[in-house]
Structure formats: structure tokens, C-alpha cells
Length: 251
Image (tube, rainbow, N blue to C red):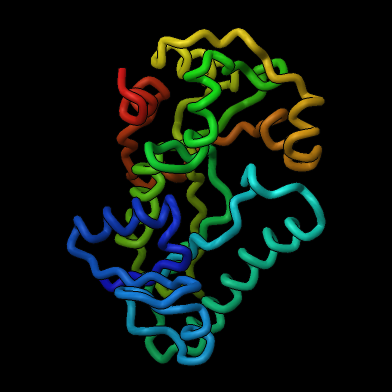
């Protein structure tokens, strides 16, 4: 297939690009900046969709970006970075004389774990220093997924779809089948790193650092099960915390 990836230069996009190319697919990335194997969002809006059998949109500002303060400007960027790119891609698909047979939109997944980005990049330093600990009580659900499995789910959706995106809608939850709490995640990461996890992070500190609207995502969590993902035939490479964390940090 020829696959178009919006936001393909990011953490998940890099893994998806690697996986697609390893399977013999051709990849074109939509990015803010032009370059080899890339087109810009302005190119899509002015020139339409290049020939492709699949399209994926991964574009969007990271909601947990520690370098951005939670304010109206950041909220606007979060919203527009997802909505504007999705609208541009949807309009280009609708106007195409030969639209892709599948269109994958990423709107919400668990904490994405991997070696060179995602949630682990922010977690490892305090854990290595022995300062890791559960968030609040730690009893809240902590949905997560290994980046290789998230890329695998996207590829699975692309390869198994045979209908134009306007005629069929499927929702695959991008989370591992293990139902872990934040406490379980914290203790397993500490065990594999051989570091203590003695310092719970109080809720008021998370509110101060992240803003209360953003902190609630981590402090309350959400129980998510990949029921349809599994029913579709997808097989997780890293279905449990131990296998995922060992691949990422060793042990």
C-alpha cells in the first residue's frame, strides 16, 4: 500500500513508518516542513490528496507536554492541532476521485510506552533517582500500550479494511489487555529498574505542575478494555507490563 501519515515525524509516527516499510509499504509523511518523503499540510490543502490506499492522522500537540503551561493558549493549540489537521485530511479525502480505502484517526489511547519517547521519557529520570512513586492513592486505572503494539493496531486496521472510510467505522481501543492500576505500574517499573518507589506524588502537586484539568487524567484514570481490538484478530506483542517494560528498559 501507499500510506499517507499526518504527524508521521512524531514518536508513534516514526514507529509506524518503520513498521510499514518493513512490510513493504510506501510511506509519505504530512509535516509542517517539506523534505524527502514528505509533503506539507499546505500542500494537502492546495493540491489535494496524493495517490494512496491508506491514510493515518497522528498529528496533535501532546496533552502531557511538560514544557507547556496549562492555559487558554495551550488548550487552543491542543484543539486546533487535532481538529484542523483532521478537517484538512477529511476534506482532501472527500474531494479525491480515488480516496484511500481506509482512514485511521487516532483520538485517544493509553500511555504510550517506548524507548525513545512517549510517557517513559518523562518517567525514567525520577525513577532512576529513586524518586518514583504512585500518583495519589495509586488505585486509579492506568491504561497503557507499547508503541510497537499501537503501530501494529494501526497497520492491522489499514490492512484489514476494504471499504471506503465513508461507509464503515470501526473503533479499536489502543490499550494493552492488562488492566493495571497506577500502583501496579509504578511497582513493576521500580522492580525492573531495581529502584525504590517510596514517594507517592500528592494530588495537589500534580494540580500545581499540570493544572487541575490535565492532572485529573492521571489522578483518576479510566478503565479501558481492547475488546474489539482483540475480536478483530490483532495479537499483542506486549500484552503485560513485565514484557513491555523489559523490552523498554531491560531487566
